[in-house]
Amino acid sequence: MKTLKLILGDQLNLSHSWFHHVNDDNLYMMAEMRQETDYVKHHIQKVVGFFLSMRNFANTLEDKGHNVLYFKIGNENNPQNLPDLIKKTISEHQIEKFEYQLPDEYRLDEQLKEICESISIPSVAFDTEHFYTSRDELKNHFKGKKQLLMESFYRMMRKKHNILMANEQPEGGKWNFDQSNRKKWDGSPSIPKELTFKKDVSKLLEEIQSAEVNTFGNIDAKDFPWPTSYQECKELLEFFCSNLLKYFGDYQDALHTEQKYLFHSRLSFAMNSKMLSPKEVIDTVVDYYYKNKDDIHISQVEGFIRQILGWREYMRGVYWKEMPGYAKLNKLENHNPLPNFFWTGKTKMNCLHKAITQSLDDAYAHHIQRLMVIGNYALLTQVDPNQVDAWYLGVYIDAIEWVEITNTRGMSQFADGGLVATKPYVSSANYINKMGNYCKECSYSHTVKSGEKSCPFNSLYWNFLEEKKAHFKNNQRMSMMLSLLEKKSKEELNELQERARNIIEQPDQF
Ligand code: FAD
Ligand code: SF4
Image: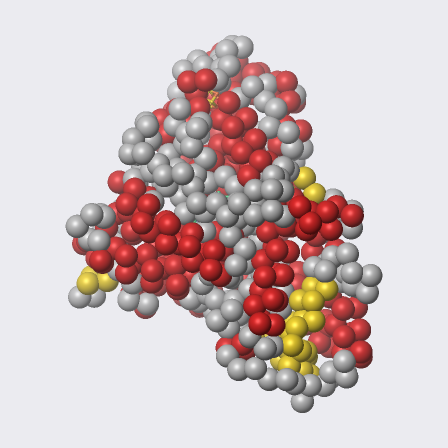
């Protein structure tokens, strides 16, 4: 039976059972579409990264003998949207059956269900064979529970998949080494230069530009750094094991003006496009650890495994449990616009200047830059979560809604009222100074609380607590901060709030 098999841009899993055997009745279809480039404004490196990886993937399938129909963004016969593409191909190729892999995005899931209802041939959906968990596994794990504690899910996953376990106990005697994963990096140990792939993408860039796709951010077309094939993803993983794993946990939360990547793996794009599976990453890292146990402490490895086996699978589960309502949540009722400097990096606040400029230049920021610098500022200034989400979804090379929205709207902006995070991730300058060196080169002083020289994060922090305290009155984890707020004199609080109001009203002046 002649079958059309759709492969979406983030379904580049070469090990999928679909590809185990060549069958001439199967026609694999991939398409670069305006539907996908335009639903949010993306960073140019993200568009290039996905299109190049898709093209490499299609070539590899063809080399293996599979039939592939590929639509480039500039092809005249490219309908640029899924419904037309599928209907046209069914009719032009006398297709008798339609098959697809379950998308990870709610938007596409709904669209594909509608398409299947509207066509007259049978259709079947397959698993992507990428994640450890099914869409509903987290939902079942937390059945009847109000709070979705990541730690409980993570422990279940460690046991179930027997990862870093010794005699049914956690390796190293503890489930979680988070407490030891909080060092500031002050120049040593030395950080190896990041592995990049230095590709010339000028031709593809021209194609994207002449198709008039509206993007933002910077790119060096002669030196594209990201992995865009399975082989390159694997190289990046091996580079991580031999060069970065040893210190990953220790400096996981560190911030530094001169080090964009510190000991982070830069593997998120490789995994989110599904070129690399989380299982392959975890198996390789755990295997490397057991072979080098004398040299690598369990805390470094556990810190890394927790991100992938814990947070990554957890966020996906929360997404499927809570969508579509999750995308509209705004429990703290924040409605301010996103400052213009999010699109330029031009601000005197050095931490934001560095983290945003880096995001625009490299389509990358590590977790603490995303959470405790950029996200912290957006939450303290009470920016509308729709605008925060749109920025995060566009700017990072790894941003796909299932993992972006749960991290941004949930973990970072507390717009879900505490489903993902047990307290809002907000801080004054104290935390940013403790974890990095941004404050040393800043126009503001992290120790000054009010007045022109004072760090904006300081007044914004107390203003946020004062304005939103009603939301946190029953939150145990906020009680200490709220009691410190109570102790502030009226005069002091007024002064802090006045400065905060100035910053919120004219964010681009600071
Ligand atoms: P590493 O620090 O080396 O971590 C290893 C891997 O663990 C990552 O590649 C990633 O797959 C996984 N991981 C780590 N933290 C998380 C997390 N909180 N949730 C899910 N997976 C995690 N990650 C995305 O993949 N896409 C996003 O769009 C995204 N948006 C985010 C938005 C905000 C506001 C925040 C706070 C975090 C976001 N994250 C997102 C999570 C995390 O910041 C990135 O996965 C990480 O920075 C990617 O860099 P890395 O590969 O070097 O990560
Ligand atoms: Fe950021 Fe404030 Fe430190 Fe400046 S002083 S780098 S604005 S935290």
